[in-house]
Length: 94
Image (cartoon, rainbow, N blue to C red; front, side, top):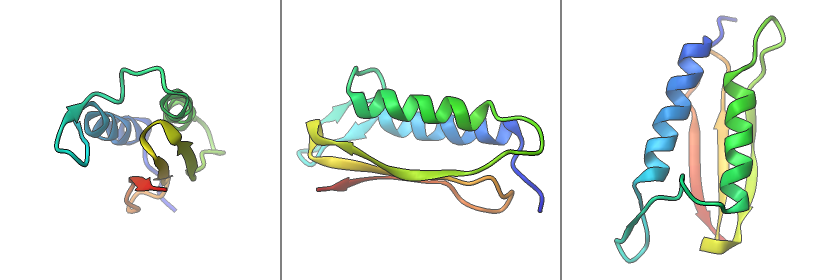
């Protein structure tokens, strides 16, 4: 299986970051979630750091769900390692 390179994983992280910087609320207001101190965003940043900085033969994908009660949502994410797999990040209403 061919895996995503560190550069590929960084691109994924930057694309998701851009979506969070320009997040549109249900009232069509744009807010920058990335530059907040919400615990969910802090945890997501930690996950991104681990995902991007993996090296060697033990590179793995990440997936999970992070509660984000401050905006009544959960962050559902899938950060794949397989070269042809697509990443996912959904802010799902709870």
